[in-house]
Length: 182
Length: 425
Image (cartoon, rainbow over all chains, first blue to last red; front, side, top):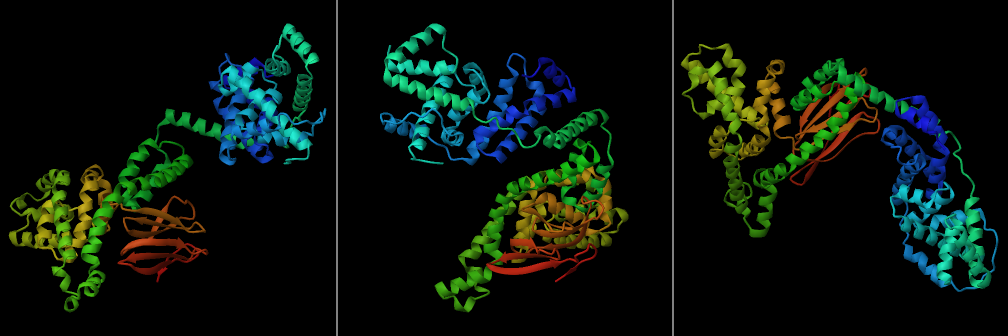
């Protein structure tokens, strides 16, 4: 949590305050970038780009918004741009088909998944579902905060999040059955 | 309570969005419904795993890594704000003047740009470089369509005579008329028609030329008011010679005129901007060669309306140009009037740059001390269109191919690898 005083100092031209502020948020910025882009190098690039943008645009931040959502909005926008440029889009329908196919299949409940499988599964989500999951779980944002970040209606955020979880569950069940990997 | 509803509540529960009462109700359903119980435990497990995802951290400090960029941003901001206050000419501007005197084509543009460029020395040089890159293609876009139309008629009409006539020989057995024959051919009449259409457009467009000329005449050669429109044309070229003989006798005058005609022919063959009245005269009696040069003139007036104003605005630079005689007059015309194509090729070692401006290749050597100062090494006019061009990897020669009438001609500039003089093959 960044102190409001620090933000104000940074906005008033205190360069040291601005640098301190960037150091405070760089891990959060990187984490979001890493999980949305699922690639270390891309994440480093995107996070640095986001930090530079924050550095240059600090005066456009208004206190009526939360600073962390303002930061996350910047980094997710950069990531989604990057993501669209580098990855072919995955249609939501495709995943829903998978979901339908597997809905009634019996499976053994496992209490833990492998972290790598989860990351792979996240990587298979469509960009908005993935972004919502990242903001919810890596940044601990609430529905409202996610809606602010992504400029989406609250209900859309909920439905993205619910569907994303459902898709993840289905994907992970496939992994566990030794089906699709990677 | 329906299972579907319960599933949504499960999600909200996981997101800490479910009130106590709703939670109790949801748990109650789950306790009774095995399917929902299974689903709930799966979802909870997934959510836990997601919460436990490794908190990735960058392997180095991102802020440290971007510090140079942040410094550069600050630097740029400081310069921006300081130059707004200072607004004083900077040494770089003069350096660029020096450069621009060698590169007439850009002069007018440079002057206007320099007004805006009251930044620091380095910034000015960099921006100028970028602006030149950005500027020239724009000109090309404007001029290209003109060139396409007039250039193509020119090629088929005058230059392409031989291949065309050969074709005709084969197709229609004009065997005896291989060279002189095409005079009667459709292609030839077409080309002469296109020659005639060009002069028609020229007079309207060169209106500003005519407006400007009387001034020049009044100042310098009032006794020539009785001369034909041809002399109008010569006033530009005459500026220097006639002012030195203000009391010229009639014989001298006629001599002058002859000289002027000569100069004019020279000018027109090197794509200067003679006024349209003379053009018409000339082209009516024009042979193929004149028509060829005329086509380039046809292009000139459109873009060339700027040319006289430039003369007015910068007499000082014209005086400088006079040192190189005719060339000095010709150079600005070429650049401003008909910039058909302009490109740059930097040599791999960076010590030379070749520029293509209006079908003229110019080799410049870059000064060792300041890469923005260019010295003209050699200029060549291209015959035909440039197909390929590029530096050899060792920077010693610039090879290019021109395409004229379907024949490809390979040529090259050779420059010494270290900067200095040059020789050509």
